[in-house]
Length: 400
Image 1 (tube, rainbow, N blue to C red):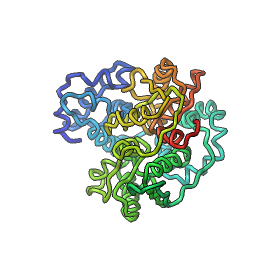
Image 2: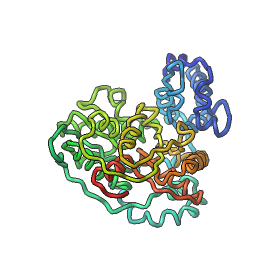
Image 3: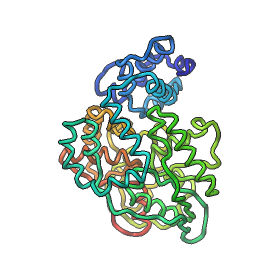
Image 4: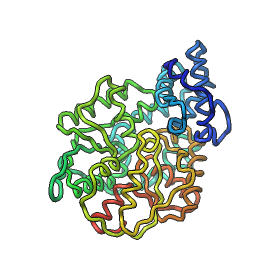
């Protein structure tokens, strides 16, 4: 933990209203300011106790506090450094260690995730039984989406019409295996806007889940493989359609100690930069746009998705109250902190219901699963689509 970064905090309290766990519990040690106080204690010689580890584990890493802080405190760097220390020093209970190993030996590996696909239809039915055995396993089952048929993408998707650019596309892990339609829509949208889309089939996990959980060695290994893959592909831009992945990939220089040979951009960020050429057909829908934390707070991408959606004829974009408060997904948070995630999910679902929207638009697979699960609990299921799917439907003139 960097003492200089810790000392940047003047304990003003502007972070408090934006912090999801402080909003839930009102506990000082479960606010960014309180956690920084605990970090300072550790730097000054206090060992990481189970209580301290619990407060650090309870942080979602949503970075809303970074957006709110007037002093420029780099809490994102602090919490990642702290989690490395927690993993190094804190001895977890055997059952907790076992669950964490299951998650980190499964989710960063698309081929292993693929083995789960035939059983996904059973997941929701099994959730109550698994929850009794272990809350994290129950949460994992309850969040499972209904998976569409796998869609194989070619190595190269050619631009439609005049070629304006050549980009690489990250397929991701959860996105690739549980939301294949999102990747297919992303490739089509980029092609319709004049891009050759290079999709290396050998690409693996970007390392986001690992780096956010303090598992630095695994994160560097996975990130290094992704960098080598896209550098061999010869692209100078890699487009990402999952907020958490994009956030981590934009910090590869810090993780790996060198700049990769390409820049990383979110899909909406890139399309706004490129400018539209393909015709938008009307979509008579009311949609609520959800700000994924690692897109809005970590990457600062807020206006671009809204501008893209607003450019579709007959489509109305409605804002969700408390949009800056995390939905409770936060990578693996809803697996390791299922009760807090459950409460935040219910809060987000209640806010979403006030919009009266027909469709929720999200730019992150974790958020999609989290909010859809919360809406099902509330007995008010809502259709969920990625920004790419909405654009794809408009560009092709089909209904969602």
